[in-house]
Length: 60
Image 1 (cartoon, helix red, strand yellow):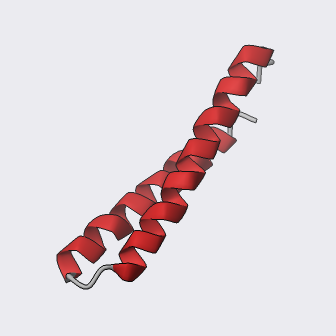
Image 2 (image 1 turned 120 degrees about the horizontal axis):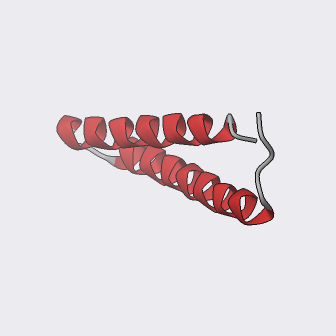
C-alpha cells in the first residue's frame, strides 16, 4: 500500500472520528426510542456509521 500524506491522514482521522461520534449518538437515540420504526431507523444508522468507520480504518 502506498503511503498517505499528512493531510490525507488528518482527513481520515476527522472522518473516522465523525463516524465514531455518529455511531455512538445513533445507538443512544435507538436505545431511547419508543417507536419500533424509529428505533430501527437509528439502529440502521448506527450500523452504517460503524461500517463506514471500519472501512476507513483499513487505510491506516
